[in-house]
Image (cartoon, rainbow, N blue to C red; front, side):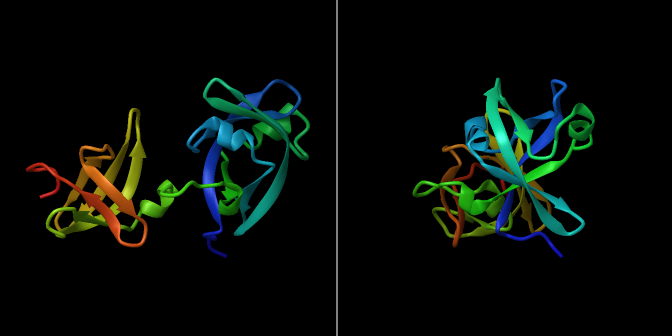
Length: 170
């Protein structure tokens, strides 16, 4: 079974927390608060999504500390370290004009003024202040910062419309 579009990566278990089985999650959501509000998460194991109820979750610095159903000691929590965590897309409420970053991958990158297609978004990198879109052009990979100066608008059905400077994408 392949991964289902109904689910989206939302975090990674990076460590244990305490000795009673809590886990420390690195949130990939807009904010750790969004992750801490979830009532259930999923693991992708042997081609299937397995649900785990969240008994309790709270934000600690930029991380989420969670107590999961059937994870009752440090050994059970340690066995989950480095596990990618999924949520159902429907569990997140997006405002008008919001979208999942994962939905940008594969979209065309289009010049907002001329309509010229530069390529497709291959990957999204987040290393600090803003995301960086990796664009696969005809001849190479290029990177464009996801800032208002370059990203004019995003239309999930039509593409990412950009304003470039010489050398950025050509």
